[in-house]
Amino acid sequence: MENPAASAAPPWRIAPVGDRCLIVTLGDQVEAQVNRAVLSLAAHLQAEPLEGVIDVVPAFTTVALHYLPQAYAGKPPTPYGYLAARVEERLRRGIPDIDAESRVVEIPACYGGPFGPDLEEVAERCGLTTGEVIDLHAASPLVIYTFFFAPGTPFAGGLDPRLALPRRATPRTEVPAGSVAIANGLSMIYPLAMPGGWNLIARTPWNLFDLRRDPPSRLRLGDRLHFVPVTPAEFDRLYEARP
Amino acid sequence: MIRVLKPGALSQLQDLGRYGHQRYGVPVNGVMDEWSHRIANILVGNPDDSPTLECALTGPALRFTRDRLIALSGADMQASIEGLPAPLNQPLLVRGGATLRFGERRRGARVYLAVRGGFDVPRVMGSRSTYIRGGYGGFHGRALSRDDRLPLCACDTGYPGATRLLVQCGTPFVSAGQFELPAAGGAPGMLRVMQGPQWEAFTEDARTAFCEHAYEIGNQSDRMGYRLSGPRLSLASPLEMVSEAVAFGTVQVPPDGNPIILMADRQSAGGYPKIAYVASVDLPALAQAVPGDAVRFATVSLDEAQALYLAREDALAALRRTVALAMQGAHGDANRQSHQDAAMPAAPGQGGPASIPAVGGES
Image (cartoon, rainbow over all chains, first blue to last red; front, side, top):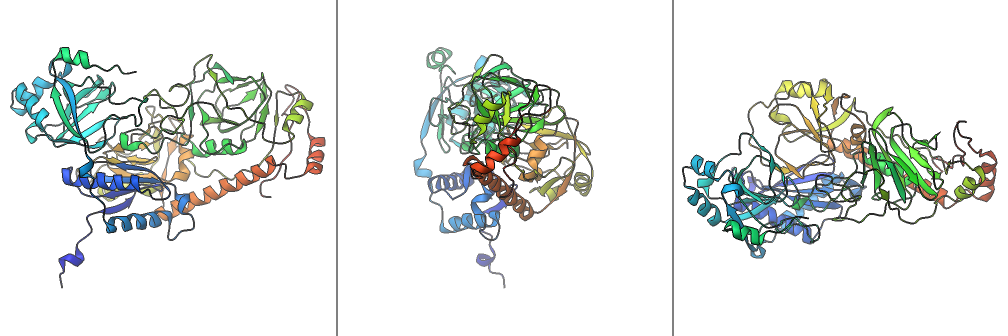
């Protein structure tokens, strides 16, 4: 009686997030394949918006849709049920892959010293030299999986597994703007000065969030990040003032 | 223009939020109490997404340079205009040169000021909401300070007859209409919540405590989140969580077991287990609660929460129609004439201001 094809669950789950948000889960692990499906679905829902949806928010393994329940007043069975059915239709029809569109962005970064105060400790904890940490970070095929935490804060997967380590036991009360950090198998950049608990290995001279640009975030979801080591003198020359 | 004589504890422009940019990690912000914000806007004939001035705990002192139609809604902070008590939830035509002040807070946490025509500040990423940490939106990305001059969009006074009444009465303001308001609903003592995705992952004791015990709003609570203390909420076994989008009213539980309800300035995503979501219709009541207040939770289904939500939308739409009719002078000149006979100017220190009597709740 077992028919694996018939009983297999679809590769997604749809669930409510309260009464005006819905979330589609496309996997349970933070990994490139799952995130690519996430970014493809988010791009599709941006390009062909569903009525009543006011925000599409991709994360590592999920895409959330914030919606106005009143947009579906009178439509059966309930606002959530109606929208979930529309999302289900889209997913069954198939979502075009976005991979071809992703850009490669080469980001200058000055490693170690005052620019990356945790570099030596990271090297020690990973059993590597600081030079190896820099090489592995710069060579990692990093892809921006999501932004959150603060405006324009990218979280990229694809970090070399030899650089896997948790966050610092005690967060810093202030991390300088532009700090490049690693933890939990990911690399991220603090675009603004803020508190943070990740391991700081470098700083980029770039300003990543500027309201005079549209969109203000310089980086995009799905961007492939290549960190390019620069000297302190080059850092100063490339430095972009934050307004 | 509004001249800020005193800024108050935390007075900032907010609208219904900066949706559409969370994929860049941009938080939504927006008003804490959507109900009071919308009531105030409706009473002056503004669209829902027009920014209001959200004034927390101690209100500002604001001088209007010209006659302006305003409405106040939300907390009772003893609003007065030139010493005369200014009622909440009524459109008031304020005389140019008059000053709006607030006294001691009697009930609620935040009062909302809507001005007909709206505040003339630019949209940032589609919204006029202030994000203080980010330094953008609203009035120069910050809360009001002393001597600020808040620009207003040019606008008429909305209700026919209100200007004439103001001229006749000589009072600092007149009431331009009285409306039967729909009940706001919701109370901190019984917040309706839907079970969250990790509800089953909490211990039986935790789920029982969450439903049966009072939780106190802590001092560390702010526009980002309300931190609650009460019986600690434990997971039956540790969970591996991946950060994902959260919404206004999400009740998340960090490892210390003290729940946090995410409010207007929340981040776009979070990675703690979610025990519940507060129903949207009850968020205004929660937004008016202050540290030290007790909250209690009662579970409802998603269907019930959405039915309540749609009923609230209907009630607000009905109020908007009634206000629009009043603004068109739908009650006729003869009717208004007889009302005007009854209108009395207010002498300072002698009761309320003059008013055009009720133009109806349901009509």
